Length: 178
Image 1: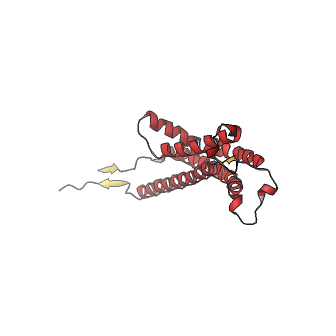
Image 2: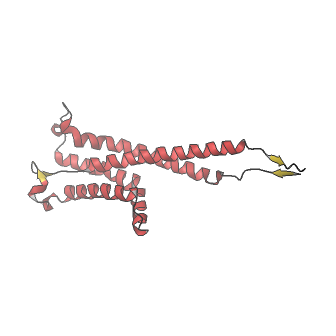
Image 3: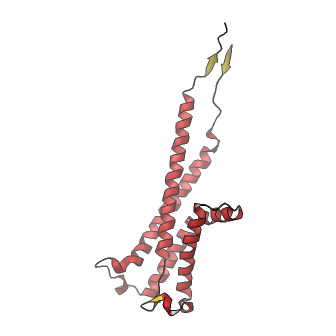
């Protein structure tokens, strides 16, 4: 008497999983390419020999940082905000809530500082200018994307390893009676 021991197919979400990895990968690489110049502009004053302010005015630098950071935060990092909102609605705060609050605060504060710097009191100014935090928003978003991408790839490899192990299982079993 032979019984089939074929494992249930686990590959239902493989295509979706690969699409998610591809999407995360694309978002990460775009975010990285846009974040590097933002970081260089924001940190130029601490890099010896790099005098960007001699080439580009501070006002133009701020608008460049704003332009490069906006797609990083609002496109590449949009799912942080979606998951954060879901966690708030479900009253189950998580890592994405914290990320969205931090990145969102740095981004919104910086946007307001570029568009309407006059609304900030003198105590918020250094050398007459309001500090921006676009680089913090962009770098955090990019690093979290990297972490999410690594995690998604690891989950995919784990799933593939489990499927390979299931493939090694015996296809039939024989019951032995006395």
